[in-house]
Length: 96
Image (cartoon, rainbow, N blue to C red):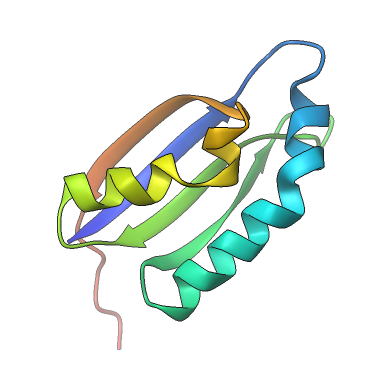
């Protein structure tokens, strides 16, 4: 199954600092997920000033429960970067 994650960062004054402190760990984790086929594509979304305030990720997983384990181990989760998360099952269009 394919899933869309929309995750908002905290809105407190240290939210961006938390993100930046663990960003390289998060990206290393994302690269491993990409290599094993779990992560399809992802990236940050920005506010009007161009600052990162959240993430959007497309995942491939056997189930929502399996995906939840993946998300729970993401450095952005374990370090309190993502605070408001929505996960939706989706079906990506085949455009080949």
